[in-house]
Length: 216
Length: 414
Image: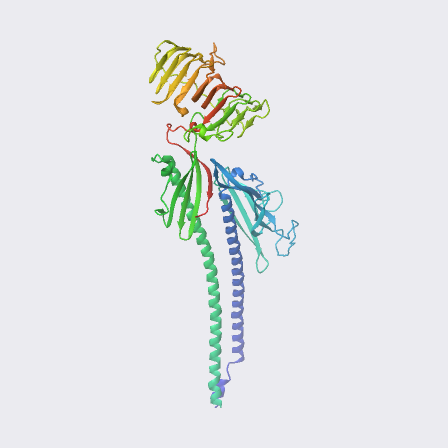
C-alpha cells in the first residue's frame, strides 16, 4: 500500500514549476512565431494581391493602347512633366485605304470617391488622398462611360513628393501614382503605384512600370 | 464500482483526443485546400495571361510572315502571296497553331487577318496594308512654278483598271484621287472643282481668288519639293523635215526622229506603237489629226522645240490606259531663248500623259485629258477638265511592290 501511495504522489513542486516554465517558454515561442508568421503571411498576401491588381490593370491598359497610335495620343507626356491622363483612339480598321479611328477614350488618375486633395484621409479608409485609375469610353461625347480600372492608387509615385523635384530619380517631376511618359516616337511608359494598409496599419505600396508600343 | 470507474475514465479521454485531432486535422485540411485553391487560381490566371500573350505573339509572327510573302513572294496574285496556312491546315509554332487569311479591299489595299490558338487561348489580329505608290505621275496636275484653276475648271479621278471613266462617274464626279500639286502656289478661281487634294509647295499656299472654289481633300503644303527631272531625249538620227498635207504620214513602230513635222489642213500623222518619236518642231494646224495607235505597244512623243496643236486639230489615242501614250517636252516657253511655242488647243479627249518640266501648259476646254499633266506651269482654262487615272500611282514594271501599314487591330473571333 505504501508503495502504491508513493507512486501516486506525482511530481515534486520543483518539477512542476520547471515543467510550467518550459511549457510557458515553448508556448510563448510558438505564439510569437505564429503571430509573426501570420503577420508575414498577411503582408505577403497583401503584396501579392497588390501585384496581381497591378499586373491586371497594366495588362488592361496595354490591351487598350495596343491598337492606338501615338499620332492620336494626347498630351505629349514628355519628360519631365509626363502626364497623369492620356486621351487616345483605337483603330477600327481601314476605310478607303486610310485608317478609321474609333471614339475618343481616356485613361487618367482621379481622386477616390469621397477623397479630396487636402492631405487628409477624408473617406476614412486609412489612405491619404488616394486615387483610382479611371478609363472613360466616348470621352467628351454623348454616351460617355467612366469605368474604374483600379482603386488604391497612390497620389504620387513611390518615392515622390510634391516639391518640384524628381525625388525618385526616374526623370519625372512630381508624377502621380498613375502616370505616362513618352519615351520616343513609338513608345510610351506607364507607371502605377498602389498602396494598402496591412493588419497592423502599416502602409504597403507596390509599383509596376511597363513600356507600351501602340501599333498604329 | 472502483473497477468500473477506472475502466471508463481512460475511454472518455481517448475519445476526446480523437475528436480534437479530427477537428484540428479538418481545419488544417480546409486551410490547405483554401491555400491551394488560392495559389491555383493565381497560377491559372498567370497561365491564361501567358497563353494569351504567346498566342498574340504567334499571331504577330504570322502577320510578319504574311507581309514578307506579300512583298517578296513569287505568285502574281497578292492574296496567294500573303496567304499562310488555313483553318483546316494551320501552321504550328511549339504548341500554338496559326494561319493568315488575306482579303483584297480594293485599290491595292489588303487586310491580313492572323489567327493563333494555344490550348484555351485564341487571338485574332488584323493588319491592313496598302501598296506604296511608286509611279512618277502621282498628280492629276502638277506645276513646278504654280497651277492656276480658271473658273469652272474641273479635276477628278478614276481607275482605268476598274473600267471606263463613265462607269465610275457618280452624279458630280468619279473618284476623289484627283490630287493637284505645285512647288509654289495653287490659285483657285470661281466655281473650280478639285476632287482630291490641292497641295502647294512647302512655302506656297492655296489662293482662292474667287468664290466657291472647291477642294474635296486637304490643302496642306507639301513637306518637300517635288523634283521634275529633265526629259531624256532619245538619241535617234534625224530623218529631216516632213510636210504633211491632205495625206497620212505613218511613223513607227520603232524609233523615229524628224527635225520638223508640219501637218496642214486635211493631213494626218499616225504613230504606231511601240514607237519613240522625236520631233524638234511639231506643228499640227487646224483640221488635222495626230493618231497614236497603241495596240501594238506604247507611243512616246518627244518634243524639243515648238509643239503646237491648233484649234480644230484632233488627237486620237487608241487606248483606255494613259500609260500607253505620252508626250514628253523639253521645250521651254518660260525662260527659253528663244521661247518655244507650246499649245494644246486640239478638240479631243486625250488618254495619256503630258510631261513638260520647262513649259507653261494651258489645258483648254476642248482638250479633255484622262491621265496626268506635269509641267513647269499649268493653267486649266475655263471649263477645262482633267480626269486622273489612279492606276498611274503604281509602276508595276519598276520592281516588286512595297507595302505600308494602314491599320493594326485585334478583331473578334468568329
